[in-house]
Image (cartoon, rainbow, N blue to C red; front, side, top):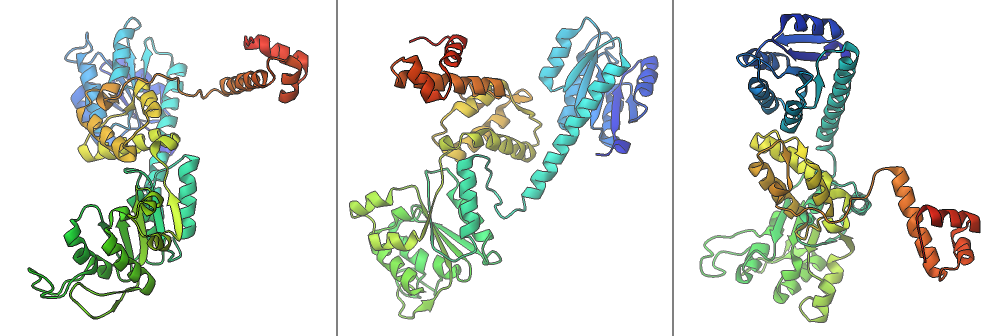
Length: 451
């Protein structure tokens, strides 16, 4: 968004003030509207990044109903537009109400050109940053790890492992609780591999009845059983040349485990009722939320098969273990469902942000996605609330961002640990902390630490 193309929409019915504002913003491409209908027409035509909106518009110049209605309509059509509400000097309550409806900022008359210009300039900076962020997100959608959204060290480690493992054909086992995104990681492995141009065939071993699973995996010949009226390929055969993803491998029956092991060793299959060996060239990725080592001890899973499918094992952390990602994922889902449902929800209020960060998310990413989807459908305001998410208010304080607060908190904890380890002996504690006794006394006084 270059300066030469910065468009500013001014919605004001006073001709004198229109002229004054035009003069204030002679460096902008200014478009003016005197009422709601004209404002919407100008919005459609010019798509401005910022709008100055007077709440007192005809046919209600003495009230605010028309101005607030204009605000709501602009945001519904163009949620990225930053609206600065201009109000009378004694109308702070309505200005706050406008902010609650989604306005970016407000300014009280009389107009001070210098201050108002600064507010508009700041709004444009935010608009430009958001635009650049959207461009980067759109560019990132075509990346090799498409669909994997992460900022936490735990999940970034998984991403680096995927990048290293994907180019090879090594059999990979993905471990993680339900809802952590094992299939997304499997797809990333496929799309980063030399087989990316071929198909990835997925089958959930827990979702198919045991009596049908063998024929689903290996296919069958005509007449192999009642109802087998024609020769049919199985999922393994369909995956030839590409990738076979066996989800919930822990639920595979023991009889089929033996047959799968032979396939992994020999890379050939026989259809049910057939005698011909069919060679298969496919990359194998398996996944489960089960503890396979425990299953081996109980005799429910073959140890030799386990070692075949776990040449490389990738442990996918739960959302509880990757706290830094919860809010990031929530914002991504918000943007996705806003677009899907034609909504213009601007974000999360402060309480819901704290709740998202504090909640343990037992259902992992799948639960988070479902709650955000429901919240967007049910939300009555421009910001999602605790009620929309059906979450309780967070009990614990969210970790501070202020560096001084972070440093002081760490210092206090370290001093308390040192005093505890030294049995309240100041000299010993000072040695542990690497400071002098006078310095430690100062810290004890500063943080009000007693025995």
